[in-house]
Image (cartoon, rainbow, N blue to C red; front, side, top):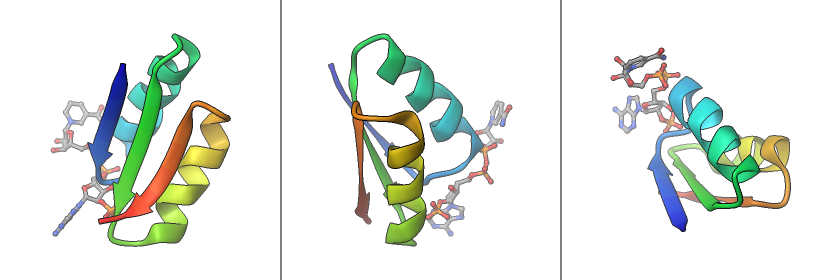
Length: 52
Ligand SMILES: NC(=O)c1ccc[n+]([C@@H]2O[C@H](COP(=O)([O-])OP(=O)(O)OC[C@H]3O[C@@H](n4cnc5c(N)ncnc54)[C@H](OP(=O)(O)O)[C@@H]3O)[C@@H](O)[C@H]2O)c1
């Protein structure tokens, strides 16, 4: 599945990381694009970050 989060905080990091490991493609939104990209990089190739 393709899953998106509004906000790149604790919940999106933990759930996004777990769902990425399970094979889903995760997109993170944030008011700070660097924060979204950092989380995407942390969880690996399953995710990407964008600015909301
Ligand atoms: N952590 C838990 O164990 C837990 C458990 C149950 C429920 N919850 C609930 O889940 C929600 C998120 O928790 P969290 O621990 O992930 O919190 P968090 O780490 O503080 O993250 C909150 C996110 O909300 C976004 N945000 C805050 N103010 C905003 C605004 N004015 N406009 C747009 N975005 C805004 C931020 O996004 P940016 O990336 O843009 O900064 C931030 O990433 C909360 O409502 C919390 O009560 C948390």
